[in-house]
Length: 283
Image (cartoon, rainbow, N blue to C red):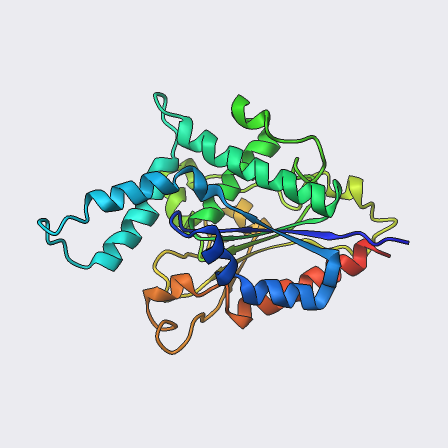
């Protein structure tokens, strides 16, 4: 008898990180998940940034002239990447295209994940930095039925693609708290656990299935903030976990923002929960 696979979506947080670089950055997590679950875990990189990457490269090149003599090049590139990506992502009445393009890219990759893991596979989303904000918007659009028409055309009708099997959501270094400043009462979280999760995995048949939404943040990471304190709705749905990520060179400063993917204090609880979910849906 075949077992139910677990679907894991990895969401990159920086627009200029190429697919091969993302794979390298998440090697530790991938290896631990595979060691624990073997072929029963299907991992898909969701590369939303391909919709913006060329434009970001072009913008960086524009400001790279030796005649400008701009200082702090590495820091400037980070700011251009992070802030530029966030600004470009926001839809405007005269230019909704980047928002739509990014969400179409997500839908296309989740379609691949559903095909490989199974239409009803429990879905775990692990999202870093700006990617966590984008995925929160994407999931909210799914739940509210507000996805742009161009995006709806790409989203399949499988439970996984509809977000109905979302069982775990992990945010790493998420700036959701910063983004919340533009919203009344700091905004509203997605409904979690997924409202239809138990329709696909009834309590009577899978009593041990548990869901969790964890926001991992490092106090030295100036891009990451606790989000359970934003309002009561967030407090009821998400748990903030402080971690000290990185090595000797970056665990004490803002460079820690790029160190979540390889940190054992982030990886270990995620893998442990996926093992529990796998056991629960295969009882």
